[in-house]
Amino acid sequence: MKKKAFCVLLFLGMSLFGSTQEPILDKVTVNKRQILVNNKPYIIKGICYHPVPIGKSERSFESIDKDLALMTEAGVNTIRVYSPIDDLRVLNKIDAAGLKVIIGFGYSDPNDHYNIRSGNYLKYINTYKNHNAILMWELGNEYNYHPEWFNGDLKNWYHALNNAAKAIHDNDLTHPVTTAHGDLPSNEALSLSANIDVWGMNVYRMTRPESIYPEWKIISDKPMYFSEGGADSYMAVSAFGYQQGENQKAQADAVKTIVENTFNSDGICAGITVFSFTDGWWKAGKADVQDIGGWAPEGSGVPFDRIPNEEYWGIVDINRNKKEVFDVLKDLYLKQ
Image 1 (cartoon, rainbow, N blue to C red):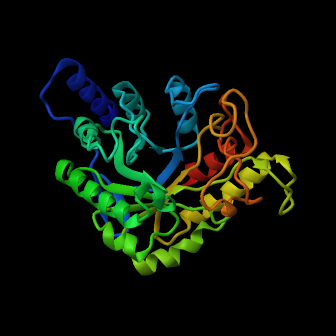
Image 2: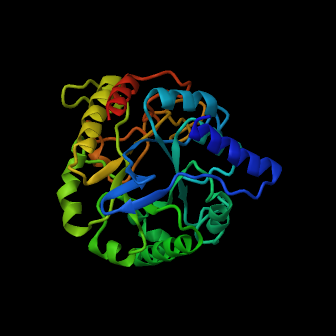
């Protein structure tokens, strides 16, 4: 029996039948600028995943089997989610597919029981820290763009971030803690958040994310990865030879360059979770139609029109039909 299958069966046996035998888990560590899994460098070939069905506003995993099959075909090895997956069956399926997941926690979302402010995120971590699918715990998403959420002072967020990371370390010695920062963190952010092991960065610098490498190298020797990067498939205006309107070629070309530059980092960057797996019809306008429009922080860096169309970012559409970018990403991920 292969080790992966044995791990999944053993974990299922513990969960369903109450066995006290410890599961055999992949070991996730950090060494210098690298993320290691079982002492081998782990390059994140990832996808951001927030599957909301047509007409709905809440995430659903009703298509998880089909989605995992598509991700596996595309060479994805890591899924990044913005809120915890509190469903053992879904985590087991992710593990059985051979993928890892970065579990995100928000600060004070009242709709998310496991937020940082409540302290309940630790309940989740202590429940699932022995699940083999977990790669890292991630705290927050682009909160540096929203000082208004923290009484107008981002130092309040960085203190909360640092304290939450320490609490995770106190409860779980087996997984690194990361955060998804909007672009490059400041020296102040780094100094106030010393307990963060890996810095995720949502970087939209047209098709030049690699411009962040020398900047990061100067200010930190910790691992970093692109927690978001990519392009939408709608051109709000014609630009750079790409015509206005739905334009899958523009998206495919942009993602090709971004991901190529991600993997050509001379050891600085640990990978990327491309934004995103599926189009999100819930984000702008009515949830039962695909609307043009939306917004995003630092939106001027979106390829190529500098205008984000929030419902067009998927590598597949809402019905899981592959866009042109799917095969481009597949080729890049399978070669890596």
